[in-house]
Amino acid sequence: MAKLARDPFTFMVDAAREYGGLVRLDLGLATAYLVSDPDLVRHILVDNRGNYGKGRILRGLGLIIGDGLFINDGEPWQRRRRLMSPVFHRQRLDGLVTTMTEVVTVQMDRWPARIARGEPVDLFEEMVPININILLKAIFGTSISDEESLQMRRASDVIFNHSEKLVFSFFVPMRIPRPGHRRFTAALRTVDKLVAKLLANRRRDAQDVGDLLSMLFLARDEETGEGLTDEQIRNEVMGLLMAGYESTAAGMAWAWYLLSQNPDVERQLQAELSTVLDGRIPTVDDLPKLRYTRMVIDEALRLYPPFPAFFRTSLDADALGDYQLPANSAIIISPFATHRNPSHWDRPEAFDPSRFDTEGSSDRPRAAYYPFGMGQRMCIGSTLSLVEQQLTIAMVAQAYRRELVGGYQLAAHYDVALRPRDGVPMRLTRQH
Image 1 (cartoon, one colour):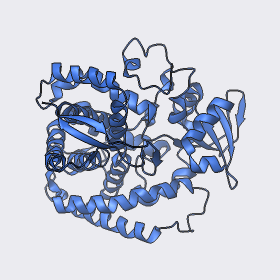
Image 2: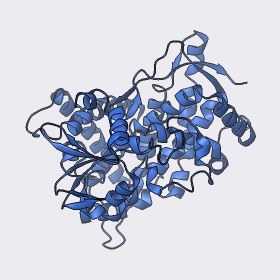
Image 3: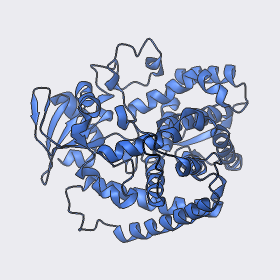
Image 4: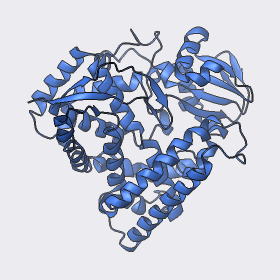
């Protein structure tokens, strides 16, 4: 298991190719099952989803997000999902497009001075504040100050980076503190204090101002008419922050790296941006026209899904193909391995956005691609993430030529999300 600890995702790909889409892993203190076969993935996430809960692997995240949607199960999850789904309706998210482009513009305005000094720009590190500021603006709107945003970001760094320890030590009793636990709890208190203040302020003026917090306050269950309590809203806010905190930035970082290594793809991207935008800032009406931009994002998510593994626990015994899975089994579902399965992807290691055109994707199993999960438990914020990526990639790519700094060696690192370990440092020059 040394290779699993050292390089878990190469291990998952190699294990799937050598042993198939269901692999039993002996982890010493625990046993887990690695699942990557599309049919088995669909069985667990869709067809027999009632038998698979979030379970003990994710129990540590309850310290961060309580009973939030991200880790809830059963009927409580169904009620919460039903209540929150309108919050993420596409029409609602379209109203955030201007906010997103404004955040990207502010971040890009910081680059010319650095470029003039001959400094490289790390396009992972630059995507992180774009993503976090969009997330905070989307959730809290204008009710959060710049100072509070900075406090939230600093504390959240500590909280969400600690989450890896909580997940991958799931077999260690929770009463045993992980390294950095004291710093983690202090950061959690900071975020809780800020969120409580923002909720109290909004309760006094409960109007729909178009942000996600307004929508959470106003959301009502269609069947019961009940809304969310402050504690439940706090948990959902923390879940939204955790799921989106670094994942969208990581997805864009991989896209920047892959574009730098594939000049033909870059040329096709520039041709689309020139035709659709011709130098202007994109609007919501441009999104359906930026098809190749979206295909670039989809292909980057195939090769480097920000969440390269999902975790489930079987409630009862179940048949996975010819194998009888015991009850209470820990399941690791790996899109990272599924997305590189040569049975479903021609040249699986190659970066080829054209495989996501309508014709190219029609003969693949639906479960061969699931960067945001699948079925009822598909990430509720997936559309928000994809819209943000499409706008940001379009704005940055049409403004700047990008060249990876000399001597850069790509390596993947996983804590909150799968990201380039050493960022994506690039030399930028103006396109026009």
